[in-house]
Length: 410
Image (spheres, rainbow, N blue to C red):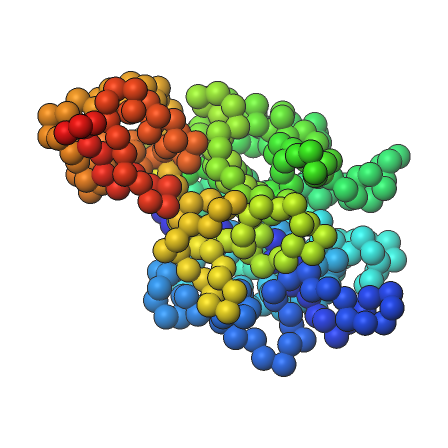
């Protein structure tokens, strides 16, 4: 199963934004809907669409958007992005579009409504965050009323959580604007529904989508206080064996990462870099603009799905457009894997025996004989290379991927 993942577009209209001194404000994004022309090497959204139209990317089963379609509740930009993405997915009957609400998508600045920050999003055409209103009417109602909805496809299940549901509410309403939240009541309802849904179809891939980070990304130079409240409980919930394995997808802080959120049965987390935001006001962010093509290994009917597969990162190159040939420091490598749950030194020993018997092995033969190599996350890949060195095997690698293994002094 193939999934296109993009997040944090932060599109805007420059003719509606002015700095306090009356001059044009610094652009928050590379997507400007008031630009005189939008070209595929200048505008990442136009470039994204062109990749599909040219056949460089085959239509995926899912197109997932992690929130912040627009910047600072820019209603024209949000509506324009949603229409363009809906139009793109609509060209391919097999591609389902699903999004989630980001903090910049809510009208907490009361541009359209003095009391309902969600009102604008609920009137978007097509429906948001599930565009097929007729097919997903119940999902739309659940998402806005219960702060989550579970959407069932033929071979996948999406738990879509509104981590912005409490923005502007509560006794500490102002701090609530700065963070995400999934409440205890919401978590209890999620568990109750998942117990039934997962038991009924254990072969389906489980995907959890929300906007805010599941863990802080603070550094000495950057203090992150926006992590989703309740994220620890959510991670624990999605680690329960009865609820299957899960892939979590989120955006928000524009920091790319791929990691396991706990022990051997914990969810795999894809933290997305921004699709198009500039670094204005976020100069400490090391990640380039990226989107991702995720391939999930499917389980046969009657088997239990495992979360394993690969991620291909596409990087934005100014004046060139989207490319996926060379990794860029600070982002995910152009090729990553996930899903290996074993002990790295054991895998290294098995591989070293084969390498020492052959003298050297190239990647195509490695992946055929050791398919778990394709399921290693970036940090696991680094650990494997070090473990191989201790048993006398040296790796030749490029762009974060092993190309060849050879015996030392062979």
